[in-house]
Length: 236
View 1 (cartoon, helix red, strand yellow):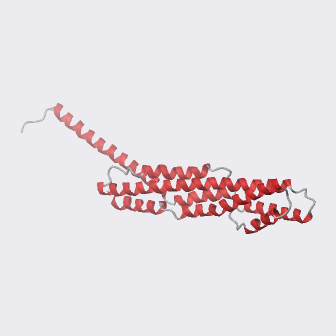
View 2 (cartoon, one colour):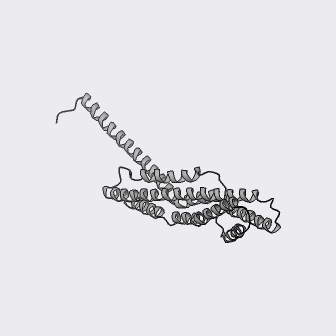
View 3 (tube, one colour):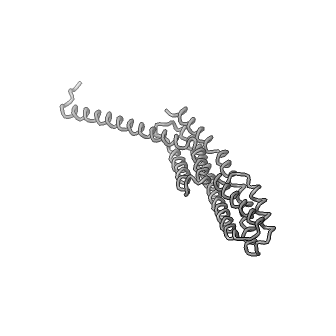
């Protein structure tokens, strides 16, 4: 068997070393991808709870803007999109199942987007209505009729309590107090304005809590769990 020349032997050694280094680099890249994938999975799990927490914080006035709510929802959508691309060493069968679940998670997150949009619109309407009711009551506080002043005082206290409790109290007492004042002689303009604000509360207030429930009862957490199971059980 002919001997290899020194030059050819050196080439083979270099080529073999390059292959080993390439394999090592691929392994490191795959490990990094798996770590990133795990992190994305963890963010999508229990996303419903994090989103509803931010909805509740907004209602009770703990935060004055919806940036935190928007952030949690964007994080869900961003990572749901990323989860459609599992690491390269995952089996093809698993990749197909993972992509199906990731697409379903993306659809669920888009559904939450519509719920949040409705929630924020109705929150703005309720907040505006309570603010306007307090303004109208303040404009009538100089009324000489003691009975009317007492009714106005009740409306003020009940409205403030409603706001303080995150618009989640039963507003029946406030509704009745508003009706009693509307039956009094407060002038046509004040009556029209107060009646409109009462109608706004009646229309939008009952649905605020329902939007939170809709997120809580959504599909995103369940889909994320199925996605996690598919990844962990079938990854190679």
